[in-house]
Image 1 (cartoon, rainbow over the protein chains, first blue to last red):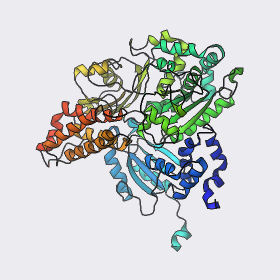
Image 2: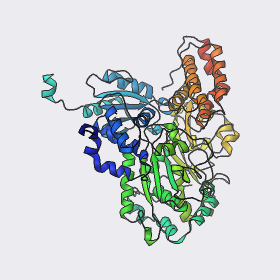
Image 3: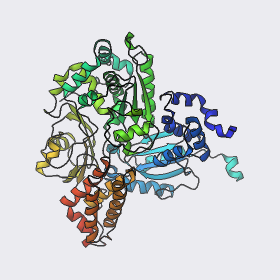
Image 4: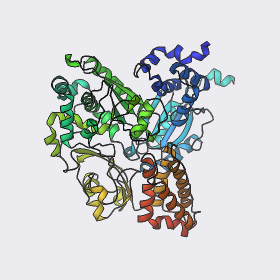
Length: 177
Length: 427
């Protein structure tokens, strides 16, 4: 394997071992989900190269890794915004106004549900129950740092969160383009 | 019941029991230590059996009995089901945040009783931050000698690990959850064999819900007779009721099993938002038949035996309230979108049925449906019910069948009133 095929092992060797140690020696395949989460720290997307590497680490086929990526909703084959704003619009939240709230978030960012802002900072998604129904409107932010909950939200809360999350513009890079 | 036994036991005051030293100072892990140093695994199982504890994840299966079914092979595994994903359910998350050590103590006692040396806590992927906190707590328990090898200088060894899901409701079904830990698609297995015989890695396995396990240290420290004195004869113990939707004060209410819907909704939760009238109750999230909010229903005790008598299920007690502004066909459409999204695709009636029911409900809600669409919806629901590998298929039809039976006018409204807009439900 060439060096670019060892992205995870090179950067996260120790953590990969900690993950593998959680499961029996002959059941390495169990580590596929934690390894995919680890991979998404490198940008919230699972690439073919990463799937090949995980398959190699675990001794399974790339198809088996790809099937997991396809089945579970928190792994992404398509690139999206750097922050995915995932708003619960399931029944209990909808009874407390989450559909309107989701539309307001979309208006604030100038996108529709499922779309990404032009600066690639945010994707707005409507998701299923987040187990926070008593604190609607609620959403989670999924980015390469992980997943955080935001509960009892108002649109002004969202506005200030967006301001916090937007990358400080890297002036030279941006202006030169 | 004035004491909180699950949400903040040992914390009737202001103490932070998510801190290990505080939990220990208040008597935490004494039951575990006593069990590991002085009791046999079999005697622990007998005590849990005698307590009458039933599974809190929804099925209500007797917990001690489940533990006693384990096949006589080793290794064995114990798995906590913290994949809480049923719409309207948010109790396990509060336990894990505010009373994590009582849950972990329960998991560890369960592992000892099952003679298992490895336990996993399967948390839904969205509980990312929470799970990282729990992993820290497990490290602390290792440092304190409650986990690891030769615990309390005995021969017993135990490790607890966390496994994060990644957004799949179906992994709350125990065999799908085990598949997921094995690194496979979260699709339910054909049963039998049951997990007690062929579970994780084909080994005997106990899978218990988070809230169920949080009851275990209480029973072991205060005895099964004390536990049985709470609740009703067939539904013992405390229960966390998750109240959502149009409640004036939504949230988790810990009560004895056996309080009525009326007491929960009106006495504890302050009634309905905006003092409107209650139209319907979904007592078990999206998965059980909708109930009309009449006196018979409101005066029914929340127990495993009483709720089925009025045509629904207690489930995990995730109670969604719908006030008189709600169009039930809209609510049913919401639940079907959920099931369509969450169907694992393994069996045809569920995969295709949820798709077509969602399509038909979408037509109804868009005011383009005809009477024959409602008939077709009923037919599809009947073709799904009872024909799937796991309960998800049946769950998906509960709201459809009961909604059409009890609130048919809300569906017909969209046929007869073509383009008129329905009442705004998002008040």
